Image 1 (cartoon, rainbow, N blue to C red):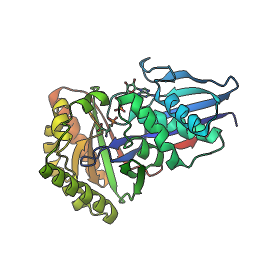
Image 2: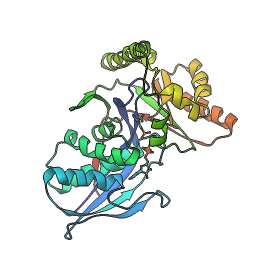
Image 3: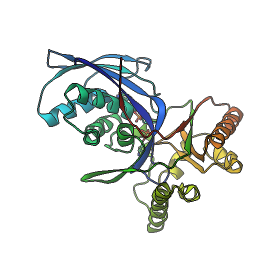
Image 4: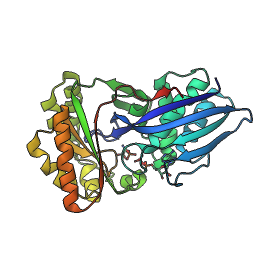
Length: 310
Ligand SMILES: Nc1ncnc2c1ncn2[C@@H]1O[C@H](COP(=O)(O)OP(=O)(O)O)[C@@H](O)[C@H]1O
Ligand SMILES: N[C@@H](CCOP(=O)(O)O)C(=O)O
């Protein structure tokens, strides 16, 4: 086998109360990577489409090649590969764009190498790519993009990745305002210290959210979608954030929050009808503000990154 293509989905990281430790994957939206083995022993980013020429082709800067290099280093081998990246995700969107490229590249490269790694073992290589993309090797985008579903990063040292159940009928509305926020920049506005009281509130909510996922308890999920760590600093960078939260209050959505580091806003709902209503409310809010948005409605994708037949 000389050529393989893989797709990796967009992801919602943090999910409000799980800063850097929780994320889930979205259906259909994502990046595609094709890899051809080559004989010259070199990794090369040969082609990138869908990025308006903005992404780096240098192998030490593109998340596809950085992730694959980390994998080859772990195997202690040299292998030439030509990487073709087809971006489906906007940059700096908060939908895990840098992560999806790395996840798709790893799943394709792993297949070409004869599957030396289980999917879960690919996560640390993708984290190296996140380190170069935003300055922090966080795993809450790459882990769900690779594995699918809701994924908890129980610990980073050593890495402890736990897949969580996805309640039937849980839908996500993603509202992407036409703005760009670099993850590195939205990390730089975060407070480095929180109070004991805030830590108690945040711990209660993350524990509640995870219990809600296990018990398919939508009310508990709804009560737990609160973030006192990142949201207060980051919401100020996102026009319409609080207006949208107010607008969806009456339609029965479970709650809303910042997807990753923003500017995308996620809304969780029980059932597709409410998720679609949330998308209509979002359109109204952003029309009023005069800012263009793309809106997607999706179930949680439990499959993660996968191989595509050409
Ligand atoms: N293959 C890639 N896809 C997306 N971004 C990449 C890629 N390779 C490197 N980057 C860098 O990562 C940054 C985008 O990542 P980030 O701001 O974290 O966006 P997102 O929130 O969508 O993940 C950009 O500075 C970009 O140059
Ligand atoms: N936990 C990270 C998640 C960043 O997600 P992205 O999709 O914006 O890259 C953070 O909050 O910084």
